[in-house]
Every structure is written in C-alpha cells, then in structure tokens.
Amino acid sequence: MKILVVNAGSSSIKFQLIDTKFDKLMAKGTLYRIGEKLGPENNVTFKANGKIFEDRKEIVGFNEGVKIIIDLLTNKNIGVLKRISEIEAIGHRIVQGAETFKKSTLITPKVIQQIEDLTPLAPLHQPGHIAGIKGFLSNLPNVPMVAVFDTVFHTTMPAYASRYAIPEIAYKKWKIRRYGAHGTSHKYISEQLEKLVGYKGKFIICHIGNGASISAVNKGRCLDTSMGFTPLEGLVMGTRSGDIEPTIITRVMEMTNKSAQEVISWLNKECGLLGVSGVSNDIRDVQKAAQDGNKNAKLAIDMFNYRIKKYIGAYAAALGGVDAIAFTAGTGENRPEVREQALRGLEFMGISIDNAKNENFERGVVQDITGKNSKAKIFIIPTDEEGMIAKETAEIVSKIQK
Ligand code: AMP
Image (cartoon, rainbow, N blue to C red; front, side, top):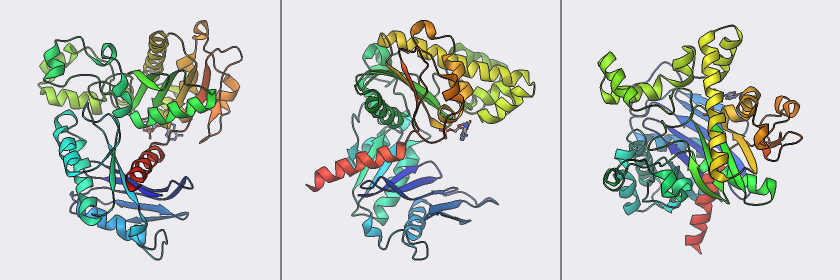
C-alpha cells in the first residue's frame, strides 16, 4: 500500500511516501514557514529518486501547503506518482491522544473534534495537527486518513506509574497524569527487541534524540516512561531540563519577573544541554567543546549521561530485572560515548557493553553491542517512526476495506 505519512506542526509539514508492500521510502519532504513570512532560505525540500529539490515559496496556509505536496508527488519530471489517487491512505502523527485514544484510529469528523478537544494538553502541537488534517481533507477528500498517537503505547501504564501523587481532582478534572511521548518509536523498538531476543521480555528503551525519553516495557506493554504530563519531564535533553523540582519555577519567576508560561518555555527551549553548556543543543558541538576544555560543556555531558543511567537503574528495579536495553534516535544511534557512559558501572546488575563493538558500530543498522558477561542484551536499533505510522495506517485501512 502507498501511504503518505504526515507530521504537521504549527507552521510546518513533514511527509514521507512509503510503499508498505515493499517497505520502501518513495519520497520525503518538508514545508516550513506555512502561514508565515518568507525568510531568505529555501522552505520547501523534496527528496525522491536520489535527487533533492529545493524551493522558496510563500505558503499562506495548510491548504496551499498540501497543494504543493500533491504537485511535487505528481510532477512528471520527478516521476514519483502518475496520479495522486495512487495514495491509498494518509497516516497523521498526533502528539496527544490522552485517554481518549487507546489505539490508532480512522479519522472521522468526530475524531477531528476529539483531537481538537485535547488542545489544552498539547497547545503547541494539536492545532498544527488539526490544520494538517483539514488541509489534506479538503484536497483529498476521498483518501482515508488515520491518526497515530504518540501517547497510545504508554496508555498501558498502571496508575501507580502514570499518576502524580497529588489529589484525585487533578487527574479526574484537570486531566493531569503521565502521558509520555515518542510512543510510536518505543513501540517500534519494543517489537524489534522481541524479534531480536525471541520473546516478549523486560526491556528498557532509550530514545535519545534532541528530545529524549526512556521507557520500561514488560511483555510488550509499557510499564513506565520518563516523559510526563508534557515532554518536559525526565532526561536531560537538547534544550529541555528534564526532571526539575517545581518550586524552581516560582524562584525563577521571582528572580526574573518572567510569567509562569515564560519560565515553562525557558525550561523547554533554553535549558538542557544548551542551557548548561552555553554552547549548543547538539551533543556533537557540546562534546567537542568539552574535549576542548570547556568545563560547562563537560558538566552538561556528564549530567546528560548520568540521568540516563539513573533511569536505567530505576526501570531495572521497576521491571524486576532486564532482558534487553536498546539505544535509538539521533544520539542513541550515533554516540558511542553516551551509550558507554550511561551503562558504565552497571555490571553489578548484569549489564555490560562490548566497548570495541560499541565504538566500531556501523551507522543505520541494528547492532548487538552486548558485553561478554552481560545478562542483559544491549542493542543499537535505528528507529522508524514513519514506517510504524505507515504500517498501522495500512492495517486499519485494509480492515475497513474488507
Ligand atoms: P533526533 O531528535 O532523533 O533527530 O536526534 C537529533 C540529535 O541527535 C541531534 O541534535 C544531535 O545532538 C544528535 N546526534 C548525535 N550524533 C548524530 C549524528 N551522527 N547524526 C545525527 N544526529 C546526531
């Protein structure tokens, strides 16, 4: 099935055309500055058939954005699709499904309304998703669309892991609980681990990218995850602080005259690796600065790796042991020193890494980097969120077509 996977943000659309029958990426692209003023740079990128096309175009809204995508996909000179009707379904990545959605769902007018109703829980993401869905709906009204939620995989968490220790009204009325994120990636990696070890075991999945989260998975079900009510909680990230004591917020408000919302934005956008190092949110830059003697950069890296280790220890305890650990996403897949430092000293728990295999890893492929006497298997597994969205979309659409 040819599935268009769409990730619509507040002013952007990222898309991939995937043929699920052959597991083949046919084309991918990004549109930026939708509904915004044009900048000096190209804001349309499209990759297909080994070529890259770039353009600088005013895009007044999502409707127009979708028209551009359709034109690119059917452009005769590029040669991806003969007709747009070859697209059999569209899968939309949706950040917040809360407790409304426990699985991926065919998009209907009711589902659009339900996604919109969750806007207070993800104000930065949900409006872009809705605009994207509506843009495709008005241009391709007959193509079935599926919503795949970042939170669904985490809906299996027991209440003792998902709830915060605050009165029930906060959960019942204010909808405050741990929702987690990166669920599509965690689910994909969990399924890959099952294939690799041959059974549904006790897994710890480290999705370490610019945003980062860890999950504890027991027999295919998420037991706990580090992101919380929003993606701010948990690990040290590129620009997010991760775990923080809440009264720090009022202290910063008092010291800076910032509003609560401004402090939350600061914790999301100006902290983490960037805030501590003062160098960059990209771990490659921070690591380089640390090697060149920048003490704050060294501290940022140490905090980053230590936090991962702390969660691995906590989740091993929560699971009552660990059969396999996986590293995925930009940093997890590409930075051997992060994997090594996060696992260093865990031999007492039966966890050890093969340093040579870890350092001489091959990019973009699954790799076993388990140490000689390790009881737990350690893997690098490239994530494939888009492939997973395409797969789930194809499954749902084939069911309704039967
Ligand atoms: P992601 O959010 O999964 O796209 O991960 C992006 C982050 O991965 C970047 O901000 C980098 O800090 C980190 N990273 C580390 N090494 C690499 C690499 N070789 N290629 C891409 N990203 C990398």
